[in-house]
Length: 438
Ligand SMILES: Cc1cc2nc3c(=O)[nH]c(=O)nc-3n(C[C@H](O)[C@H](O)[C@H](O)COP(=O)(O)OP(=O)(O)OC[C@H]3O[C@@H](n4cnc5c(N)ncnc54)[C@H](O)[C@@H]3O)c2cc1C
Image (tube, rainbow, N blue to C red; front, side, top):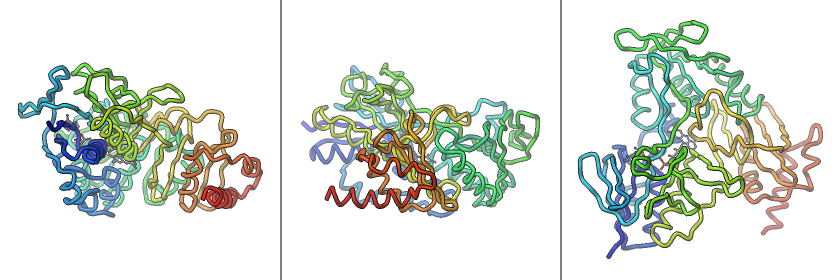
């Protein structure tokens, strides 16, 4: 009899698992239960949708034909209970679905602020398409907004609001933007770009309370009692994995659902993938969270393969990578590039990997040409991380060199020399290295 795979979620973790299952077992039954009525779409793309650079239709990673090929049953509903012993899942409407193998890929959700006034109409977040549409709708009438938080999402909201001509005050608790990933000069470039777009950047400024009238936001009050009149307060202080279902079902959880190298949870026949899965780093032996699209795909693919066959395919975390845009500047972040904790975030932010801020004793090399920057983290004979801001010519070469742990010992000293032509050195090294490997 065909094996029934039930996948909870509808994002890249679940859909990549469905692709892997279908690839391995043409006869399997695949049922996807997803709570988002908009189905499968690109969440990283929401920033561009918000900034009016991409229509809603441009967010779809799949065509209807792609879905038809997967031959799956898709249910738009919320799963509310899992019975691991009985191999059953209960849906919000009361229906029960049996499974042979279950995947939990419920993603993560924005951490709400705890300040007074958080419940007022006009307090917004950016988790999904409905949130993006809500911000756009409100932007039509809004004059001013206060954005609170760190990481990529805060910046995406700031830029989206500016694209809709809303005045923006951006509050940061610390002295600069995204302190634990960017260098000081990278943070300053981002902030300078924001200021040139008319954003008022406030350092060392905390949101103390949100003031309302008739249930609607009218101002945000900062720690020193200053009141900033506004119609919107956007909160982007990090995300937390949606582990409630798993916890209630008795699955072992840390920050996420604890999984082994095969993405198996502590319960028989239940796997987890995507933002919600907490994997173990084989090198540090520490639990690691990643809130990255590509990582969700990789985890989903591995889990799906193991569900359809036998759990023999280990998840290979790879080097975390994000190619994003920070205040209009195309930026690639690879490997480990920063350290410490970002006081503007509780936990991890979207588009972020814990690995990025776990830099050990690496030597940092930074080179600039106007707003174009390259920063390398060198550990012994390898490059363990890089930030490429602006000109992206070296984004791909550095991804390859870092991923392959290429031995750059021969140019390590030259890279660290004063006035080193870092871009040139990397470019020629990469060409030679590629030719040697061919
Ligand atoms: C605004 C924004 C910007 C981002 N930027 C980047 C970026 O620049 N680069 C990058 O790599 N990543 C970025 N990300 C993160 C990336 O989108 C996520 O890492 C990825 O989508 C995670 O995939 P997932 O399948 O684990 O979960 P998700 O894509 O979150 O999907 C989970 C789905 O499960 C559904 N669900 C939850 N609970 C239930 C339930 N009980 N029953 C049924 N369905 C349920 C949810 O409705 C959701 O549709 C961004 C995300 C956002 C929101």
